[in-house]
Image (cartoon, rainbow, N blue to C red; front, side, top):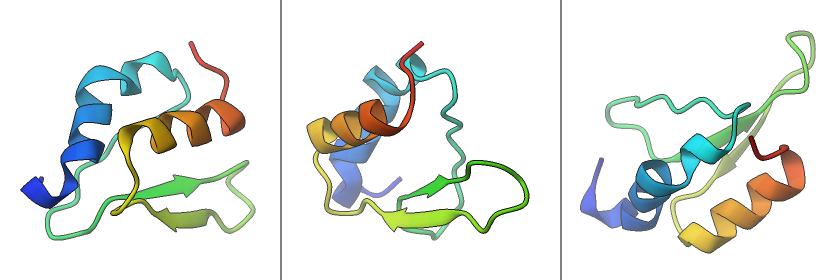
Length: 68
């Protein structure tokens, strides 16, 4: 992961495990994004998080997912 995405990397290393419904997948060459899917039928919402701070990622996920 690029040094440009330090906040995303810090979130993954320190906080991501606190969200049981969150899956982290590394895709080489792709900018960080959140893919939100309620079920397999609907088209997922894709949000770029390249400029988000760690606290913004955590707050957003707390509002969308139940912490584990």
